[in-house]
Length: 225
Image (cartoon, rainbow, N blue to C red; front, side, top):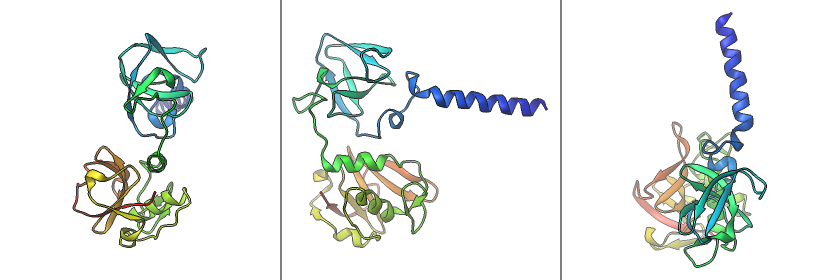
């Protein structure tokens, strides 16, 4: 009976935690704040900048940044943007964060290839299934790439070999851009940028991010957009 009561109590605590996780600074993760986005760097361009729990000036303040402070941008191209600061995730107005191209987080556009990556990252942690094409219930490497691109209106073959011929060829990894398809012998992945790929790796690891796009020999790189 005592063990049963402990299990019930633990379940209730877990439920309360899950219901409140989005409002707890430092606990909520990227995918809970925004649909998984590419991480970019930005710099505060105003004297003082509040980082808040929600997209509202009335929302609780998480922390305060000052001019020149650096942040990780988790979203952009909108009035309010998601940022990560010292392990905490919150929101602020993007016009107060400068980015590398000379603009601000609010007016920086996301390329089609970056949108492909952002969408693909939503499914990290989901299972690998040989022959599968479901981004939630299981996909193999080419099924994952095919289904991600299908979301953007592109019809790709369900074959790692056939995907070597889609789009146009990219000369080298140094010229690869987010959204490009990295083709290996018997395997394919989506290039994220920063020498990373997201892919349906294997039955043990499922859909995952791998650091080092050339972790195995690259046969060709293809650009669809």
